[in-house]
Picture (cartoon, rainbow, N blue to C red):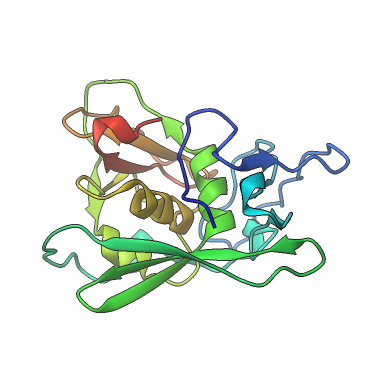
Length: 218
């Protein structure tokens, strides 16, 4: 499969929004079992296609089409941050084509341990992520990026803004991290700049700020 090029626009190298009927995906109502209920907004699902030069036409789709149904892990329940040495390595692995569609995953490896993230969800997370402008203030907490990548389901928080440091990692690792975060109220922020603090209002997930190298905020 071709390399993944992360673009700021809705088109990610080989990616396009699902057209189908053109309907927007309805949000589900908040329940007591939902640790991070969705914001009252509407979103459009995402799929991706390989470069035509590959030869075989197939549409890349998320492994879980309805991400609201995916299990979730609160940041507060992640293992404590560990000392990391050097960047992670990452590669994409594709599944066989079935009825014109296929899934793929990003494998991220660190110190002999591998985490797996669905490529379709990663593309969705990249598309939904906000790009922040410089502002005063700081996030109220931090979380370990490697712990988040290894968490089951999608990671979210309701206890105020949390920062995950992905500086020094390549684009594919950053994309994988976005695929592990519950994709509402996620922001990309250049390293060395602060983000305005927000307070959880109980109506949806607090913000997860992913700290990246400046060139990766696109």
